[in-house]
Image 1 (spheres, rainbow, N blue to C red):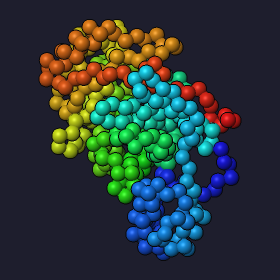
Image 2: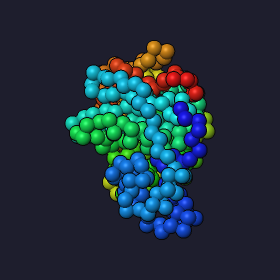
Image 3: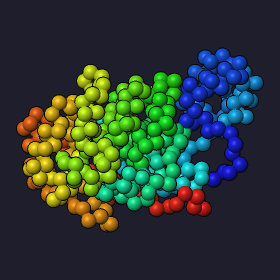
Image 4: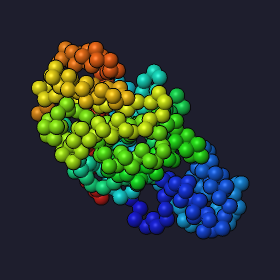
Length: 352
């Protein structure tokens, strides 16, 4: 922790904001490109080393900005090769994110909030409540900090905003982080390799489509009727299934893009033949693929995953109805690093 910091973290500062600042300083805006190149492409953390920038501008930058990344406090290794990271932020708050390797990609599941306020009953993160939102710098900082300690062959290729928190409930910082992540001037991640998960905040989804980011959305549906979804996900009382589905049908997508529908399967709750039939009816006309996720159990939950046979039967029905339906392989379950399992208990401001 460093309570004396009064300058702004450069990580998370958008191109637009830096151009505004440079305009106020009467500095040519093309200099923004030069600074971003040093920081994001050459990994420079010292303004004085930016040799193609005037000394006076270097001094101004040093007076107004600092570089701050989350600090890796703990690494927990899964038998499947995944690593769960415990990251400490400047105020002592901590978040978790998970690096997951496969043959074709190296995916980072990052967090957008310390905790979450949406109170989904099957999610361990919900037990924390919402402590605070992350800044744009803290969001992209997870990517940068972890990439810096990974070998070249293990560098992050894909990013999913599916860790702690509801991304669209922290709208401004998440959008700023996404712009930096996909910008050729900054982190240069392809939009096809970034996915933002949401519980279905329809109002924010409508705002998000106006951002023109062309980022993949993953929608946590998890029920085929409103009574069940009300119980599992209280946000459904504000945005019931029919409102969410209508939003998805009207949501503009680039050619060949589809929404991802996430459906956590809970034994005896939402896994029946009737559930599969209702789900297919809801999703008719929605360009989507469906990820079926057998519940990732944790000690304090009474929910259990269905049998493999039941999961396969659910999937097969959807395939028969011409949907692309996949059973998502659970990753990092042995280290509580899977979907819905992130929930460090360290409080904001805890001395370390």
